[in-house]
Length: 115
Image (cartoon, rainbow, N blue to C red; front, side, top):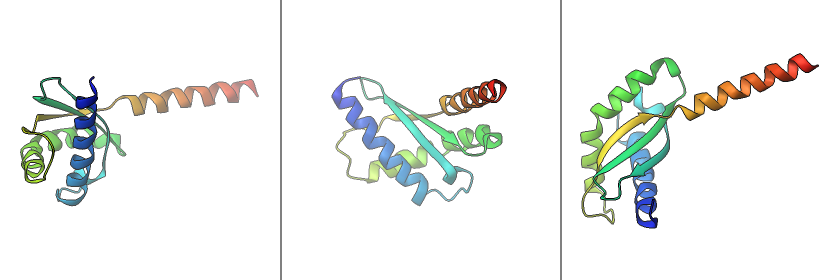
């Protein structure tokens, strides 16, 4: 990723997080944590990675976020961003957090077995 795409990804992540917290009124979506953003080199697509505290609601949250991407994109367009065209948004559940928790549980079990 180039410096420009990293900067734009960081800017998008910051602005999308603010929009989700302050502008979206769906209670399920408001507890989403954005963990990363990848922007294509042609700036046509932004993949926004997110995680949810309650994993039982992850499918609904991702579905709701992808359904609200038109609203989020229009709110991004209203803000004075330094990009000409707002990329299409795709929200993806970030499995790395749950994977890290699973590894942590395994390490704790190994420590208990050693004692």
